[in-house]
Length: 322
Image (cartoon, rainbow, N blue to C red; front, top):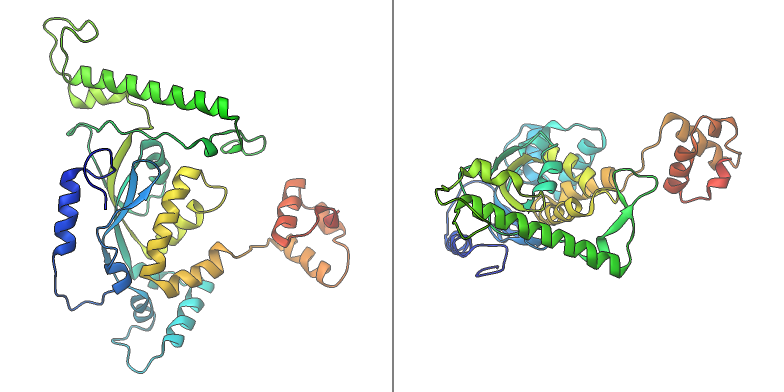
């Protein structure tokens, strides 16, 4: 549990969480003990961020119940539930997964939030910098994740830079963030002795003072999403090609999901995360290879990049595809 100064939680937030965790609330609805044990507790992400579960509805049993439109467990076995859940996910019967919902409190850099909000299938309520003053907390990457522009992936990074260059990058990022925050404070509370402010300077509106802050600063929000759309979010955001920073949040949420809906998580891992999708042409090439035949003209229908990707999927030398 974080608390006190220099940690991702403010003292007020830490006290609120302690009170929430200490409260005992009787309920008739189904609960998940493994997830209930995580309720309200923040899981650290990056240097100042966190993810914490605020509330949830449903569990593996809710997916099964929705699919069968039945009440109670009756004489069903866990193996029956597992088989049904795997059938639903395998065959893209997605509606039953919408019966489960998860609400998270997330603290994240603004640039990560702008990627995250592209998933328009959730409910979001974000900290308002028009109403409140942002804390002096900004993201600085670890040296080992500071990389050059990737030569092939225009939206990704390649190998890491030298230690000397990484040091300089961090100096620039930190100096710029601290300078803009100092100006932010000056705009909010101008004094004649600070930066040559005029004698009659008055506090600037918060909605204006914030506009110069970089996207490395942290924001917070409450984020609620159903299980079906959470699957889509995680399939993209914990993929190895996702940006490191948002992937760190995805991995934290994945740990929550594994505790919350273990049967759904297992099926999702098998049929989505670690599955291999083949196009029509790729499937025909695989059939030929299994029969011991060359890929032949089918491989010519693929671009070099597609052939490389297929070779990676199959774990074979690209030369086998022609």
